[in-house]
Length: 288
Image 1: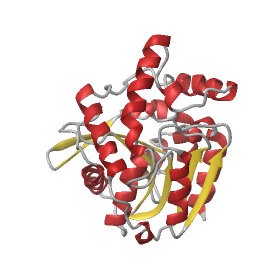
Image 2: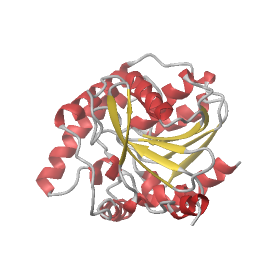
Image 3: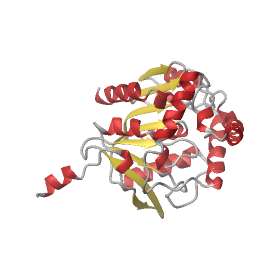
């Protein structure tokens, strides 16, 4: 078997089976997983509050990896990545760029969900030559209405989850309608499909540090989004409690080259509830 054939056979097609690797940069060991084709511009996924590698919906990852190289990672101090968790979105963005460059990448597409969408905005504004296209889901601009309430909502729904023996994401990510409840249960079941070599859960200290960063983002002065000239796909559910949906609409209106998708009867996790439609839309957007 020649090297080319071996490379082709080594392609990972399922997030469930993607090995966890590490790359070192500036004294930090970043944990990451990669799958999909080895060629082309990769799509780097940027994660939400408290999330580690195992919190990405495998249907979204596998769906996009069917056509694109996908890279997911734990930011500094989160999950299996070493170092101290940054307390600002700007510092998280700097770390993400450090990770991307440590892999030897010179251009990427970004998919940022929730807090990850905030990080993606900063990366794109600061490093425009690094980013080709941008997908922002369940997120909002700096100073966006209601973003400062994420801490309060997260604490409230964590207590609700404990009292009802449910995962807080059932309340935070999905509506309380029959569709929303069903979608939440299905999503949480998909997150358990990977049974081996799972990531470390986020520490409480790192979680509270991330909450502080989101709170500061919510209190910040609005930034000039007209500097982001890249094509942007903006998506959310129509009833997002965490980052109110009006922020998604505001984001799309302020980005000069954006396309907006709002999913009906869906909350913060709209892209997971409508994963088939979202993947189709994302692939179409990335191909254009």
